[in-house]
Length: 223
Image (cartoon, rainbow, N blue to C red; front, side, top):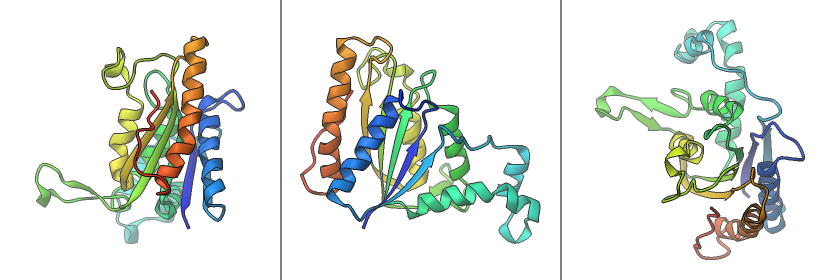
């Protein structure tokens, strides 16, 4: 059975488009695999605290040398990494904030990308000393963006620091397969927006079937 780590990063509730997208994805998955385990982590409503000097010092101290205070400092990080390790599929509902991740989602990444937990560091590897420890995970990003043209060749491609950042960091989550479904034009609230919403929700069941191996590979990225 599959374990899905379902992360919502929007601070909004019912008005959040990315929450609706991620909820739809999980619901469609359970339709096909009702026995799947869902781990829910709502960083939008309960954001992890920012990393501090004390946190960094604890993370770079060998486990056997840590003080009780340092173990406490890393307790949430350990919990988040445990959730990540258990998951086969990572589902992230991610709104675009100022062309990048929300602060809450960035803080989640900062807490889970940790030396000797999700990546190793060895200068003997030369110019690329970092290497992921985890393997074989699938990432699904369901994003909402106020403007448009953020995809390849789009008029705002160079301004997209949301999915590009997520997919870069995903390497250190053990991700080997990534997918994106996005809603654009949210701030315009016009026919283009409504069409983008409809296209995104139509793409979700197709992507779920693809991830489960029910259908062959298809292009489901909604831009």
